[in-house]
Length: 102
Image 1: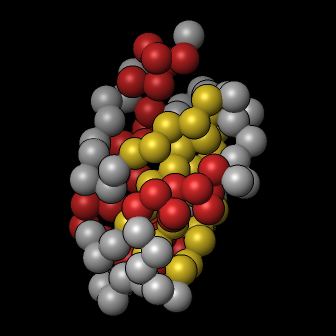
Image 2: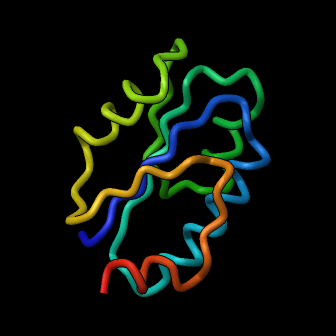
């Protein structure tokens, strides 16, 4: 596994969806994994991830544990040589991971 991407989400379903679309485009040809830690969102973020991005490792917190704690939850599980902590309102370019890894 080359890269593990960790995204902490709290009530930003639209941004998260755009972020995940861009991440998966940028992961083409790279062995990677994506984690979303949801901090008890009340929007449809969790449902959206389950339906549209079934390969995402989804951690569903029952309370808002905060940004650092949530990142650490996923970091304990990652298998990547590199770990990227990514905000859900970020859109990455298609060649971003190629440029930073190789």
